[in-house]
Length: 390
Image 1 (cartoon, rainbow, N blue to C red):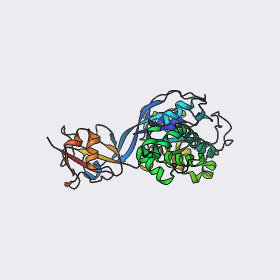
Image 2 (image 1 turned 180 degrees about the horizontal axis):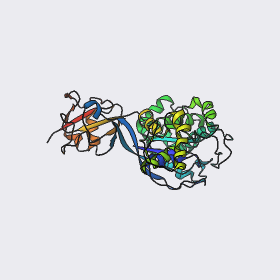
Image 3 (image 1 turned 90 degrees about the vertical axis):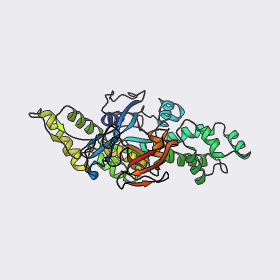
C-alpha cells in the first residue's frame, strides 16, 4: 500500500511527512522545496491481539506498543501543486504522475488560510481553504481528461466493433493505478460510450477518481489563530484537523528522551529531569493549543483513517502454530498484514507468498481453532494459520 501526501507548497506537506516517518527532509517556505518525492515508512495503528489472547508478542514486520500494533506502510511526499498543473505548469506533469502511483491521497490544506493559491505564505485568514480542496480535484480531473481524450476516436470505433470498453479504457489509462473493475463500475454509473460530451467525460472521470484515488483532507495548522473558525465553515468536507508541526516536535522530544509519547496519544509525560524551561514551555503550549482541544495532533488519526476508512483495510495476523500463535521460530504474533475487506483465506496466503496460492489447502482461525475454507472472508483482527500441501 502506498499513500501520497500532496497539496500546495507551504501547507505543511513535508512537515506532515517528516512527522509521520521521522525522516529528515528540507522544510522551508520556498515554493518547490520538494522536487523529487520524499519516500519513507509511516505506521498504521491497530489493536494487537496480544491483549485479547493473553500473550506477550514478538513482532517481526511491525511493532507493538502497549497493546497497539503499528503496521508499516509506504508514504511519499510529492512536489507542491500550482494552478494549471494539468497543463504542465510548475512541476505539474511530475506531480500528477507521482499522485497516480498512490492507493490513497492525503491532501494537506492550510486550514488557517495562510497560503495563497500559488503556495506563497500570506496573512492568516486571507485564503479560502475550500478553494484548495476543489483546486486539487480539478487539476487531477482535467489531467485525466487530457489522457482520456487522446486516441478517443479510435477507442470509440473499437468499442463499436465489439471490444470491451473497460479493456480499451484501461489500456488508455495504463500506468495510473486504475483497475479494470474501477473503470467497469464507473461505466455503469456514466456510460461515456453513449454520451461523450466533455461534461459527461468529466463526470465519468470524477467517479473514476473517487474510486481509484480516494482523498482524505487534512486541515493542517489548526493551532494557528483563526483556523478553528475556518474549519467550522468547511465542516461539510469532513476535514480532519491536525498540527503536523506539533507532532514532529513531540516525536523529536520523545526520541531525545525528554518525554514519554507514542504516535496518536492524547497527552505526553515529561520524563527528563531538569528539562530546559524553553523546551518545557513549548511542549506545554502544544498540550494547551492542540492536545487538549483536539484530543491528538491529528497526524496519526489521519494515517489510520486513510487506511481503514478511505481504503477499507483490515489488519490480520498470520501464524504457523495456532496454539501458541507463533511462527516456526517461536515468535508470537510475528506479522501483521493490512488487506482489503473481503480478502479470503486463500488470498491472504497469496499475499504472504505467491507460491502459497497453489499449495493452499485450508486455514485455521487460531482464536476458535476451527478450520475455515479457501473462500472464507477474513475479519479485522483475525489470527490465521495457513495450511499448505508439501
